[in-house]
Image 1: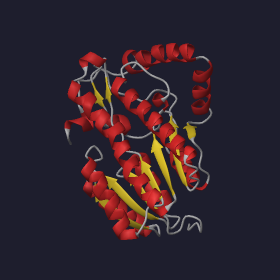
Image 2: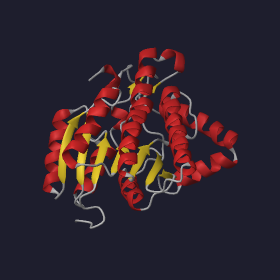
Image 3: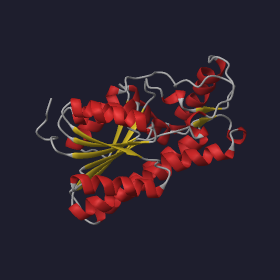
Length: 286
């Protein structure tokens, strides 16, 4: 159903071929927005573009590897050349590798940083350049609850997501000290969501990678991203009451929360999880 406030807005979404990214693209398309959907899997992107058109929006599919700055620059240029502006940029692409830090191949740690941190930095850079030119825009970066709370066996993922939080905080400070009011930077911290994200995770624990319970409906993240375009907030935790509650508890008693998480992850992802061979998931280049 078209939304007068959203109709015609130009929304760039990375990681749009599945999961939260795909759901977000569909959400904006059905309200009349112009969606620029970016990801590596071209067939899924083309299918998504057709779905968005059928929902009433207009969509442009762009094959993009966010770990390559030139790919992200091309994405921004194509969005502007096609639609003349960018109103919203959502950095959603994510990857991860699970296992003891020194037992995970170094190349995988590097790929996670390149995708989750540098990919977000590249997207933020080209989005902010365009926003400053046109004097408006909303940047939405999807981090993770592990972007606030460190967790064992997620070293590079947690490092990258902490980096996103730091990047966004610095950008908000720059906007504030320069008295810029038309540009917004929002960071979203989801709890574990019921998506295929862990199907693409690299896993070197000897057990099948599973989300850390409790697990939530990814529509919560989709709805939050949509709401933030209308009602920007600096930081939002997503996942029922647990998301905000977990981050609040960590601010009050970080050592207690980190100790609890340090026990929860080995129990849920190693002791309870089924045995499985090592895999490199999406980090294998597929």
